[in-house]
Length: 227
Length: 53
Image (cartoon, rainbow over all chains, first blue to last red; front, side, top):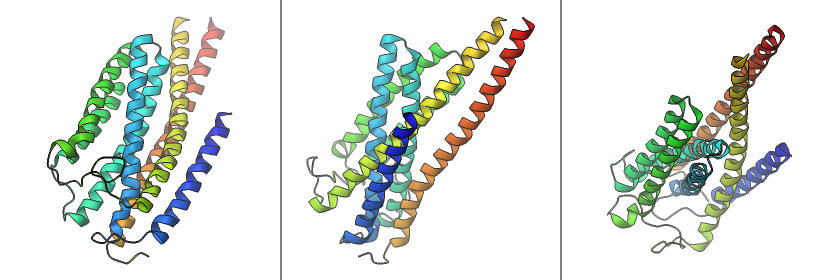
């Protein structure tokens, strides 16, 4: 059953991405000032939406672990955080390539970029912390705290373009006040977001399977030591 | 239609996204193989312990 879900999600993601690549590359016109490079937004924005959605899911799972003390929620939070960090890495990489052309520099210590880097470092720290602690309940408790702490930074990343004058562009999407992309150009962002969410779900399912194997190994080891 | 202005950097941007996804998938595949090998090893160790006990 799980393999069928993975297969369906993969086909759905591939189908949407191929369709949207056709739209992005062959149908949509170039942006007046930026030329072709603006098309990076069609992966940059969906990747950050997917990453942040994942971090919020991890927050919910971490909170549930702290309430129930069930290690399944901790495993789920770890799986989702790792996958979301991959998408956050895509955001930083694509943003730097766009900045190289538009600003003439790979990086600047602008509020949006800096808070995003801090966010990436917090969640990278979360994964490093998990490797450093062997005792499962202690690892789960501390990881949950870091996950909750990390989510506060997401709000700062989100609002940074309103709170400070930043070199990073202001809101792009029309759902947010001040956003002003032409309606026909916004669609591929949402479609690609759906495709990346399908891809993220597949990666989380695979990662969860690994967490289950790890737990089985731990329990078998304990059993072996009891003989 | 696409003009050639900045096209190469747009390609780098798309490629970077897919390289990161592919690298992560490869990492997951290697990790799964190692975990399955470890599981088999622990199972064998447990069987031997049971026989001795």
